Amino acid sequence: MTAQKRVKQYGVMRAIGMGKWQVTRMIAAEALSYAVVGIVCGSILGLYLHHTIYEKVLITHFGGSWNIPYTSIIIIIVLVLASCVIAIYSPSKRMSNMEITETMQTL
Image 1 (tube, rainbow, N blue to C red):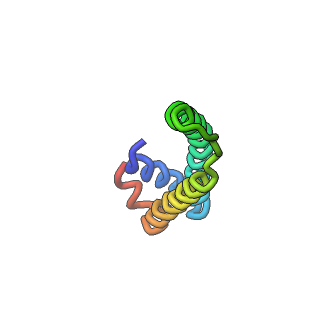
Image 2: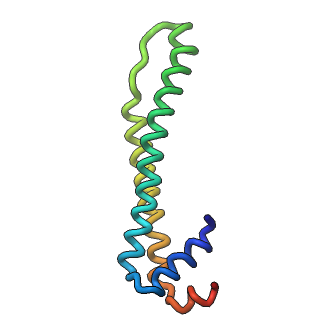
Image 3: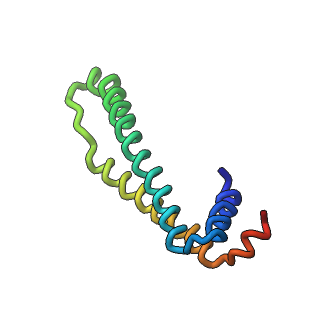
């Protein structure tokens, strides 16, 4: 869904009685659900691919063993959560500064 359609959708919700705090909570719930699903699926798929490539390229030629890259996983999780905060803050601020009538005029 495009950003403009999403703004219209939130504007309609505000017009029927949702408060700014409730809209912010909806935006946060959506962003956090995307972030959590992305972290879980990305970690599982990423660890599988990392192990497979590491085993096929490095271990078969040079030997050694594979270890879970905890530092990289933590850095990625921090970056995803930081982008989630930005994804919550920016639309929430825009929606709180926008009047309900201004949103309804674009429909």
